[in-house]
Length: 256
Image (tube, rainbow, N blue to C red; front, side, top):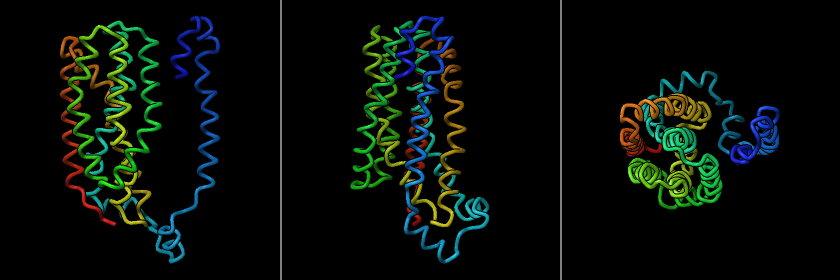
């Protein structure tokens, strides 16, 4: 949203102070985050093992020794999250504006609208996964993210409308992505015992994030070039990742 608003500034104003706006406003989010973190109590499970002095002293070694399969499956399951987020929230800006020459403000605002929609769809998806089952919701959503990449990129590439292209972003990112991100934390929690849960989740989320999130814009750019400006190799990549994540989720088993 801030990025979209800064587009209305002149180049001189943006270079002078506009680019700092997002960073200054993030101070509010930092304060809110600190407030929430300091007010949250430890879970009863962790409090119990802390009282019993059963906390792991070398959790990363224990995680890799006893939960290696769960870590690998978690990496595979997490893959679609990083790819979908970075395709629709990062890569589409360069693709729609730089390659298809759509209006930059419309594209940025579409991503902002998708993020706004996620405020509502993520809790709904999370509650849904509590009733239906986290593995089932996450796995099917991962596969859905891969399948819809083809019609979404068709709309972006051939519609000739920035508004329709923005609608594709809102649908794919704001709605279909929510059942992936919503159940994710609880899904990964169930892969590890309480004594190593924090380290286990961090190993899954952060390491997989480094691989999936950091390289996705580079991969998508290379695939776009390989496809001579057509997005079908990118859509194929998302589909393959969706299948990997769905299969990884299928073979997960709740440990605790």
